[in-house]
Length: 592
Image (cartoon, rainbow, N blue to C red):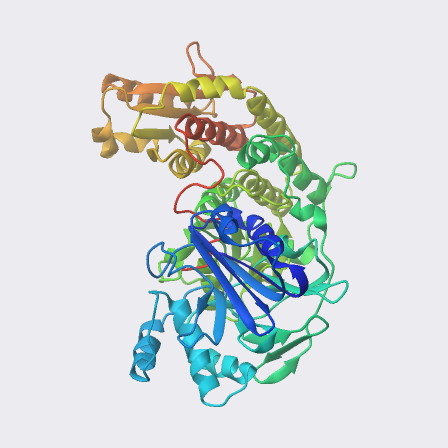
C-alpha cells in the first residue's frame, strides 16, 4: 500500500516524481503529493485523486536538487488534501512521506500538543514529522533527530525526509519496504520498490529494519543502532519490471493472457523433462518430507491458492493445512512439534505474513513463495521460491495466482516423487490458453448479468477453491456482492439467499462428483436461480454455459479461475469501472 519515490541530484523533479508515482499506482491510492528542495526552499504540492491531478497543479520547468513523492492509501483520516503526503512539521522545517502505520501516534500527538505543537492533518505521518522537528529544536542534528524519533515510534514505517535549509535526502525504515538506488552519475534514489527508480540507477540495496541514514548526489550513508552500516548493493533484472501495455487495453487483460506462460515458466524452472527429475533444493525437499505438517499462510488470493495446494498435498498423503495469516497471528492454530511454514505473497511485503514470521518459533523452518525478489519475506525465510510472473500492475491478482498454484503443485510432486505433475500442469496451461482465446463467449455471459447485485459460485473438491478465487475477483473488480460455497453447503443456510434471477456459476471439473454439483444446481434452479455451468469436456452436458478443454481433475482450477478472471474483467468494463485500479484496494498490503 502507498508508494514512495525520491532522489537527490539535478533533475526535473516534476517529471521524475510524477513518472515514478505512475509506476507505483498499481499499489492503489486515493491521493498524491510531492515536494522538492532547491536553494534552501521546499515547494509542496498535493492533490486528491490521481497522479494526473497532482501533475496538473505542479508548474513545469522547476528544477530542483532533491525531491520526494507519495501516493497515499488512507489509514488515518479521510481523503483530503490536508491528509495527503508529504506531511510537514508545524514549523515547516521537516517534510516527509511515510508508508506504514504508527501504533502509538495518539500518545505522541498528545505529548506534542503539550509542547505547543499544532496539527493540520489527522495523520500519524504529521506526528512523525513533528517529533523530528521537536528534537531539531532541542539542538539535535537531522540524523540524531531521526534516530531519537525512531526510538519513540511503535509500528511500521518507511520514511523519505527533506529538511528546510539542510542539503541531503534522509531515510528511515522499519517493517515497511524501502530500497536505495545508486545512480550512474551524481544521482541517488529511493523508492518503496524498484519500479520507479530502475531507469535511473544501476545498483540497488533493500534496507533492513531499523536502518536510517542520508544520501547526497555522490554518497549514501546508513546506520543501525547508532553504528555505521555497509549496504549491500546488487543489480536488478529490468525485465522483471516491464511497465508496458504491449497493445492490450488494460493491464488486467494483458496479465490474464500471460497466466498460461507463467505456469509453463514454473514447469521449466522446476523440472528437467529430459531427465524426469525435479530441480528443487534437496535440503528443502528433505525438510518438507520430515515435517509433521506443512502450514500454508496467505492472505486474499494467496490464501485461496494455498487452500487448493493444501488439498492437493493431502491428496498425495502429505499432511498440510492452510490458514489466513491475519487470523493465524492471533493463535488459531495447533502447536506442532516439527512444522514447516510456507508463506505465500505476491509482493513479498504483506504485513500480516511478516507478523507471522515475527511469531514463528526461532529455529522453525520457513519457505517463502513470492513474486518479488529481495522482498522482506524472501530475505527472512530459510528458503525462497520465486513465482516468476514478472511485474503485475493490475491490482487484482491474475497471473501470479496461477503461478502460485503451479509452483506449490510442483513442490508437492517433488516431495511425493510424482513425475506426472509437470505434464498435468502443461495440459492445464493449454486449457487456460483455450479459455482466454474464447474471451468473447465470456463477455457475452457478462453482458447478461450487468444489472445484478448478487452472485454465487459453487463447486465441490478442487472446483470449490476456484469458486472462492473467482468470487473474490467479481467482488474486487465489478463490485458485485459475491459468495462462494461448496455445493453440499448450500442447503445448510446459504440457499435462503437465492432469489429469482440470482446468477450462480457452478464449476464442474471432476467427473467423479459432477453429478452431485449438477444436483445442487437443480436445487438452486428450483428456487429461481439462473445457473451457469462451467464444465470440463469430460463433465459437459448440453446447455452448459461454458466448456473448457480437458485437464486432470486436480488441475481444473487453472482454466476455471481463468474463466472467473475474464468474467470479472468484462463485467467491470460493462459497468463502466476502473478495471486496473478498483476502489479501496491496494496491490501490496503493507499494513495489518
